[in-house]
Length: 452
Ligand code: ADP
Ligand code: MG
View 1 (spheres, helix red, strand yellow):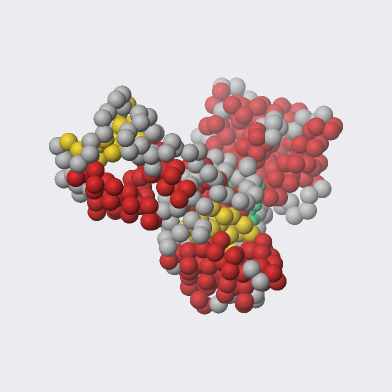
View 2 (cartoon, rainbow, N blue to C red):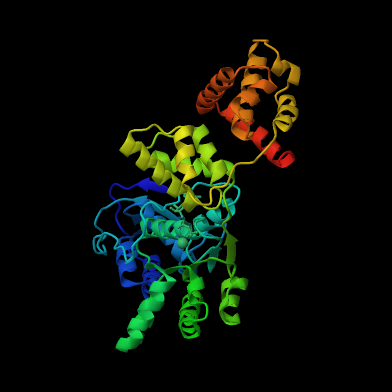
């Protein structure tokens, strides 16, 4: 419950003493900055009908108090029938006799370089990464209190670093009082070497052990570096024992890392989540999203065309996008299938799309569209048949590797009719999600049942 305060006179009695005792306890438990920023601005107002009224400068202070010190509140202050602290909050800024120092701007104690584009909002979700993204969000919202340690593993270019930074961003914005440190394992090792040389290792230990959140990227770098691993493991244990959050990324699952059993067991204590290769739809969505962020107009059909061919990782997808942007800006070319074909021709490792035969398309697709092959071959102009015919032509052109005049001949049409049909379908797909879905369903069926 939160109300706007006008002028409330603070009370001084036994309950006030209980509140003071609570404050002393909290003071001993949190950092000076956190205390000054989050606890000192709270004012005990009164106790009435078994409920204590506290005045807070804003709703965040209330949330901070309840999130972090509920157990202590229950221990020192009365509880309601549900066993929760019997508290009522009012927002206000009047000065009370025991008024604490004015709330200072929370200090951000994060001394690391984060990629500003790596946020949760910019991480596109699909079936391959839904679980890991929700777990990462859970960790970001309740550091140290949900999954600890949290391990993200998966192949190169699939978004591990993106998620790691997203967690760091989220915590440093929502809970700026926490001391967050995000770095690569390589930097950790370099730092360790430096401190060993300068004989200042105790300083480094003190720093790491004072953190609230440690995020460390690419732990596989510690493989076969036994001494460094041991130092990291000690830091890890010291933090975990104080319920401080640890997030680690790795290119393989902990069990497959060439590290000590002690370290592997520690990592397996927590939640181990894998990022996988996004499916076709997610890859297309990532491309569309990144193109939009960078101001490149990209038709959905072209995004799918690329996503079908670039399937090894998201980083490669971004590489293709960079080439398209360069081509678009420097040569003033619009990004269509012809331009994309040209660009993809020069990219190593681009896979040809699923290969199917015309027979497979003609057998599988018409029934999916609720028509027969003779309807497709006919000249019936009613909308249902005309659209189905266009879709079949589009799929023949985009999936079957035969010359256009041969494809046209399968349906008794001319090659310009096929070309026109393809353009119409591409245009319609941009504004008609159900047509887009239909075409992807057809592609998926062909992928499963067809293939040569
Ligand atoms: P990893 O650390 O797994 O090698 P990164 O996190 O560096 O991969 O990701 C490579 C690139 O792909 C980054 O630019 C990242 O933003 C992008 N990326 C990966 N997955 C996604 C996703 N699901 N949504 C948006 N961008 C993604
Ligand atoms: Mg990475």
